[in-house]
Amino acid sequence: MKDIRQRSRIAVIGGSRPGRAALDAAFEVGRLIARAGAVLVCGGLGGVMEAACRGAREEGGLTIGILPGGAAADANPWVAVPIATGLGYTRNALVVMNADAVIAVDGEYGTLSEIAYGKIHGKKVVGLATWEVKGVETAATPEDAVRMALDGLRG
Amino acid sequence: MKDIRQRSRIAVIGGSRPGRAALDAAFEVGRLIARAGAVLVCGGLGGVMEAACRGAREEGGLTIGILPGGAAADANPWVAVPIATGLGYTRNALVVMNADAVIAVDGEYGTLSEIAYGKIHGKKVVGLATWEVKGVETAATPEDAVRMALDGLRG
Amino acid sequence: MKDIRQRSRIAVIGGSRPGRAALDAAFEVGRLIARAGAVLVCGGLGGVMEAACRGAREEGGLTIGILPGGAAADANPWVAVPIATGLGYTRNALVVMNADAVIAVDGEYGTLSEIAYGKIHGKKVVGLATWEVKGVETAATPEDAVRMALDGLRG
Amino acid sequence: MKDIRQRSRIAVIGGSRPGRAALDAAFEVGRLIARAGAVLVCGGLGGVMEAACRGAREEGGLTIGILPGGAAADANPWVAVPIATGLGYTRNALVVMNADAVIAVDGEYGTLSEIAYGKIHGKKVVGLATWEVKGVETAATPEDAVRMALDGLRG
Image 1 (cartoon, chains in turn green, yellow, purple, red):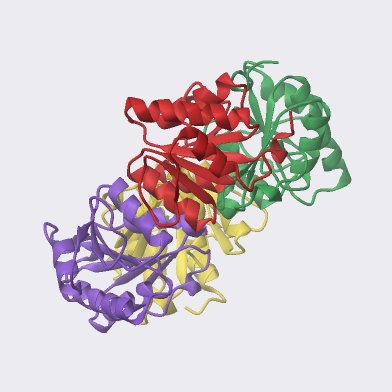
Image 2 (spheres, helix red, strand yellow; image 1 turned 30 degrees about the vertical axis):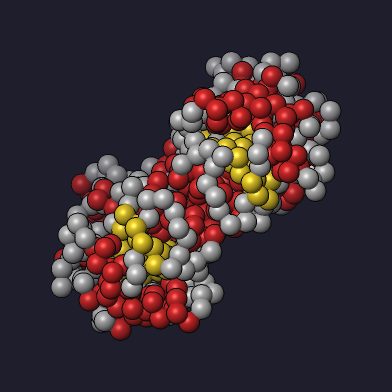
C-alpha cells in the first residue's frame, strides 16, 4: 500500500439524515474510493458520512473525519482518524480543504456550504443527486462519481 | 440613536469584482439599511462589500467588517469597525453568524458559501440578482431587499 | 471624537472569576482606556472582561466583545459591539489580534493563552497582577498599565 | 497493532528553531511514543515537530500534523497524516485538542499558547526544558516525559 501522503484524498460530503437511496450510494462511493487506493475525508458524523466511511473501511481503506466538536469520540465508528476542531459548522471549510476532489451525495445547506468551499479552494466537485450548482459535474452513479473525482489525480 | 445592541444587524454579502449594476444596487442597499437604523455587517473587503459600506456611511450608519486576514487595516475605508480573524475564507461563516438577516447581491462561490451558512444558522436570506437557492427569498430591487430583510426584525 | 479606525485599540484580558481587587483594577483600566480615547477589545464575557467594559462605558468609551459562542446576546451588558465567533476558546487568538496592545489583569490559563498570542502577533503586552511571562511588561497600578499600553501608540 | 481509535494520542509541541539538545530530545520523545504504541500529534512543521515525527516514524509509528496553512504539502516529510486548517497560528488550539496528553519540548510563545490550551482543555501537560507554568509537570529526560504523559492513559 502506498504511503498515505502519496494517495489521493477524496472528500465525501452529504447530509446527516438522508434517505435509503442516498445511504446506499454513499456506501458504494466509499467502497470505490478505498478500492482505488484513495483516502476518504469527511465531516466524521452520521448519515452520508457514516455510510461512506463504512464502505471504505469494509474495503480496508483509510477514513479521516474532521469533526465540528471538540471530542474525537464523537466520530462515527468507521472513522479511523478523527480530528476534533471545536469550530462547529465552520469546520465545513476544513473538510474540503483536505481533499483533492469532492463528491457530494444528497445533502442540505451544510453540503451546499461544502460544495461552495470546494469551488473556492479550486477543487473538482462531483455531485450525485445533490444541489445543482454551476461548476459542479453531475454523476449518474457511484461508479461515475468516483471515476470522475479521481480522473486527473494520481490515483 | 438606539444603542447598537438594540439595532438589527443586516449582513450584505456579494462578490469582490461585481459589475456596475451590482455595485449600484449594493450602494443603495447600504443606504437603506442605515436609513432604517440597522447595522451593516459584511466581509470588509472590496466590491459589493465596499459599495454597501459606502452607502451606509453616507447615511451615518454603522458598518462592521469581518475580515479574512489578520490586519484591521485591510478593511475598505467605509468599514467603521474592522474585525480581523486570520481565518481566510473560513471567516465567511462568521459574517452571517453576526447578522439577524442576510442580503446577497451578485457574487460567486464565496457568496454561495455565505448564503448556505445563513440558512445553516437559521437566518432569513434575501437574494438580489444572485444565486438561486431553495429557501432564499428573491427581491427585485434594493428597496424590496431591505424591506424583506427587516420584516419581522425589531428595526 | 476621532473616527473609530483612527483610535488605538487596547485588549483587556483576564479571568471570568477574579477576586474583588482584580475586578476593581479591571474597572479602572477600562475607565482609563476610554478616557484616553482608545477602543477597548475583550472576550465579551464576565469577570475582568465585564468590569473593564463597564468602566469604559461609564466614560463613554467604545467596547468590542469577541465571543466564544455563536450568539451576540451572550455578551455582557457593557459590550457595545458583540462579535460572535462560534470558535469556543479558540477565539482567544482573535481577541488580541484585534488590539494594538494588551493589558492582562489576573487570569487563569485562558489569559495565559491570550498573553502568548499577544506575543506571537507582536503586540505589546502589559501585566497587572497576572502571569509572569518573559517579554510581558509588569505594571503596578491601572494607571501604569494603561500608560504603558498606550505608550508609542497613536492615542 | 491496535486500531488507531484505541491508541492514546500524545501531542508533542515545541519551537521550529530549537537547538541541538532540544532536537535530540524531541527525536527521542517521538521514538518512545511510537514504541509505546501511541499516536503522535503535532503542528506538522519543522524543528521539534519534525524531529519528533522522524523519531516516531523510524519506530513505525503514526504521526498526525495539524498545519497552520491550507496545503497538506507544507507538512514535514515525517508527517503521515497532514491536516490543513488555513487558521494560521490559531490552529495551535486544535493541536492539543486532539491529544490525550501533551509533551512540550523547548519552544517560544507558540509553545506557551499550546501549553495554555492543553490546560484549558484539561489535558495532562508535561514539560521538558520548556516554559515553567503552574500545573505543568516537569520531566528530566525524554523517557520520563513519555512515561509521565502515558501514565493513566490506556497505552
